[in-house]
Image 1 (tube, rainbow, N blue to C red):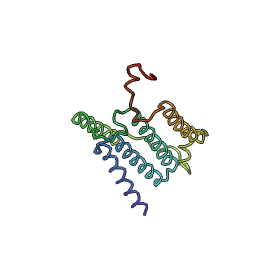
Image 2: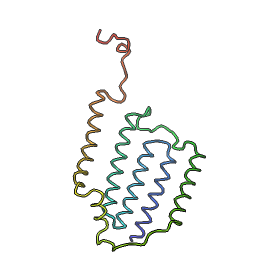
Image 3: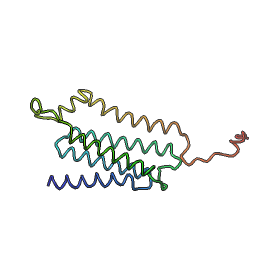
Image 4: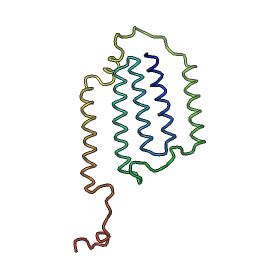
Length: 178
């Protein structure tokens, strides 16, 4: 059963990762990227790295949500739903990606890895969590929600009119209020 879930999550992660570059909208690409990260977080949880899996899911979902907010705010095309391409300089990107893959693959295979020292801890996930965040983890969880609420509140306060507000021609000519 675990193997089947692992394979399903792997297929979802890869398919949604590919979808990032196939869909024709920034918003859809963002949600595809979020789906890919959630699947990877599920993989980490399946590998009994619960802390890293949950942190990956929480961080990436919040990051993608914030990215969509800024996308709607700053793009000429609200919500990024008009067709576009995520591929720029396709030939150059392919060369860089292939070179990076070969370099990293060669490094992984050819580097003499050190022998393990010591023993594996009883709960490696907890050890990694403590090493990364220490006792500040509950504080960081609270801060992430506060930061998101602050961003949304700032947007609401900064834009008193709606996204589709049309300026009045009289205001442009300095005749407003006459």
